[in-house]
Image (cartoon, rainbow, N blue to C red; front, side, top):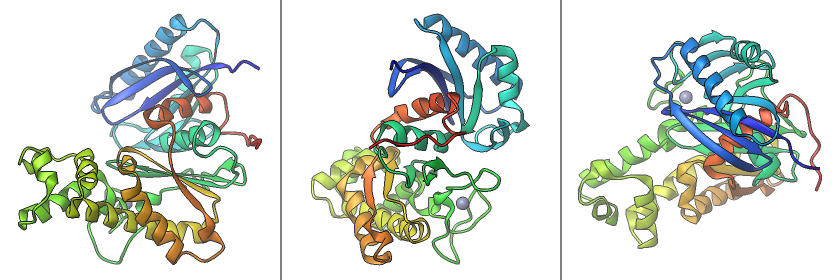
Length: 324
Ligand SMILES: [Zn+2]
């Protein structure tokens, strides 16, 4: 059977990406700036324009529109309760607004839940019914598939693995908590840790790769330095992998997932990050749940669009059985 064509809209911190999606393929995509000061009304209009543009480009009828929002969404009503990047977005009935103007099926979902659906249906999570998906970036997001369906918790915020605390004391977090995983393994915190070590006089290839300027360091330079055998670089990913592994130990003991999929920018660090993560879970988790496999995500930066399009088909609202 030919797969339907849908539209995915992925609202990010800097850009709103939108694309025409068929199965796991993004047929066409473009974006417009998010500009956090815009009102919900202006963003509604920009999304409607984007959808019209995509409908014009599509050779086939569009079956639905899905929107991934980096915030708390009331599903299935499609009300955006709050959104990290868009401070004006409080209780916005986005699904209703778009549906009225587009006359197409519309669904709205948390962006990491959408990515989780994408990796589950088309990526590294295929074939299992119990899955945890983690995205590592500026923020650390998580999504859960439990018994073959997306698990949202009672009011839609389940899966926030990045906001599990690592201790009693530590840095305050944007979520209102203290010492969250994100405060140690978010991109900014990783780079700040590396810079502190360099300031303390540690020698590292990372600094050479950044042309001697600590402000220019980005995570791929740490990966490159790892390959060159750099001690600080390897210690960086080992520390990050261990901290994530500790939290995942709790997650696997609690949920007993078959697979954990790790995506987002720093997951590109590969074995330097994955080995300490896997080792920590193997050593610390209970024997049964510890048999989980921890694998990199497969869909890369397209996961958001592919997942949003899946949401538009109503995949997030129903349990769809996986065939092995
Ligand atoms: Zn937090």
